Image (cartoon, rainbow, N blue to C red; front, side, top):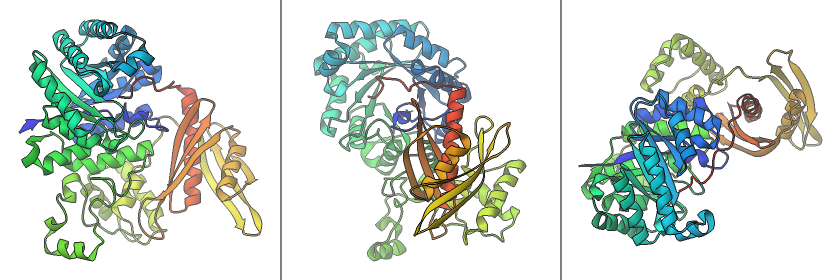
Amino acid sequence: MRKIYIFDTTLRDGEQSPGVNLNTREKVEIAHQLEKLGVDRMEAGFPAASPGDLAAVNAVARAVKNASVIGLSRSREGDIDAVREALKGAADPCLHVFLATSPIHRKYKLKMEKHQVLEAAQSAIRYAKKYFSKIEFSLEDAGRTEPDFRAEMVAMAVREGAYVVNIPDTVGYLNPAEYGAIFKHLKETVPDIEKVQLSAHCHDDLGMATANTLAAILNGADQIEGTINGIGERAGNTAIEEIALALETRADYFGAKTGLTLNEIARTSRLVSKLTGMNVPGNKAIVGANAFAHESGIHQDGMLKEKTTYEIMSPETVGFKESKLVLGKHSGRHAFREQLLEMGYALEDAQLNEAFAKFKELADKKKEITDDDLLALLEERLPDAPELYGLESLSFSFATEAAPTATVKISVAGEDSRTAESGGNGTVDSIYNAIDSAVGEEVTLVDYSIQAVTLGKDALGEVHVTLRQGEAEVRGRGVSTDVLEASARAYVDALNRLAENRRVPSGRKGAEKDW
């Protein structure tokens, strides 16, 4: 079967999702998991956007050994130089350079004529060839570019030695028939088109990103670009897991496949969701909580007789399990270790001891411990540096006829603990006011969300908050069976991220990079 290369842009386009701000450690952690998943190429960021992004791309470049690491660049020598610096130490570096080509972008954004756009792109590729053996060139907003000019730009990229040419539907405007026809036209009309790989990069503004990408594959695309869980600018990008399973499940129709390790999809999806704070909808294809759930009696009857009556793919294929091992407060360390090994987590003794202690604390609060509970415990992340603030204790009072109050005790690195009490419009507001009083930070709560990680009345609650301080905006996460404790932990986690931002400023995430 024809090989379809996977270009993952979770760390670049995915991070452009509003409110998402991955630090260096989190980017490296996701990159390692993308290696396990088996992506061919991963775009780690936009180095020219800020010193912080350049450093993060460099950390990914040095950590990844089994995939090509890519840095994004506008058609400017300064941007290209930034990518050179960021990809030092990469096993297989690649430059991704782009320039807008559509009439609306030429007129309003670039203020350039066709020949100026062609010359600028050609000059950028020629400059990049001095330093990179692998260059991908993208025609931003290619879908709304005139067919003859689009073909002229692709022909230029072929002549100048690009090894991948990307034809993005930047704003999710096209339908599958239109998008597929573009690839067919380029294959038939551009001289020496066989010298390059054509790539599809689709956005989901009209809900057609996956369909458009599959249409491109049917019409000759060699590479697809997307993100895990379909995150990204506006309505997001093509979801890589959907393309992979469409090709796997309908190999008879598409005659193509990816090189992904499919049973790593569920774990990759969960990791990206937790670190970005972007929840996966229950009805999300492939990785949603309900993707392999059956409630209808008719469906259940069919499943009991023959699973393929209602399941066109198995949960095991993507890394989910049908059965769950129930753990409780009477379980020992050996059973705990064996369950983690079965889930794919081999912990060192010190890590196991820490996780087991957390497990015991949770087991005293919950009747049953599921695999999802264990994953939530294991995904409690260590900070990049010693935390400035820590939640030592929390108490609060609430009555329907009186205003709630909260008291917190906060540890501060290098200082004595601070205790503060405050009221508010509700218990969570009281807790946050008390924390503000204790730490002396001036912040604005931009967003607050809560969800159950697991099932049941004693489920783990997961809280995400977004705090803003000046121009900086960060997310914090807290998990507990008590949602008020989870709320406090999420707030303190966000304060620590703000403190870390002040210590190592990351700058803005960049501009003109959302095809």
